[in-house]
Image (cartoon, rainbow, N blue to C red; front, side):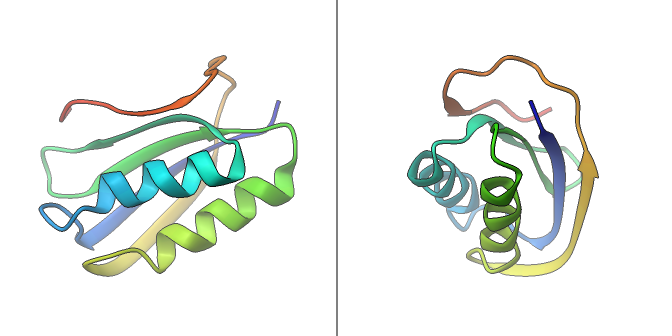
Length: 90
C-alpha cells in the first residue's frame, strides 16, 4: 500500500494543525498518525491504496492552519494503520 511521510515546518504548533490533519485524513479515508516534533515541526505518516488520495492529503497540509513554511514529502513504508490518530510529541 502506498504511504507518505510528511514533515511540515513553520508556525504549525499551537494552531490546531494536528486536528486539521486528522480531519483531512478521515475525510479521505486515510490511515496513519500525526504528531508534533520537539523541533517545532509536525510530522505525519499517511497510508491509502489510492495514491491520488495521498497526494490530495499532502496538498491539504500545505494549506493548513498557522503558517506553513515548508513541506517535505517522502515515500514511506506501510505500517498497517486502520484509522488516523493524533500521537504524542516525539
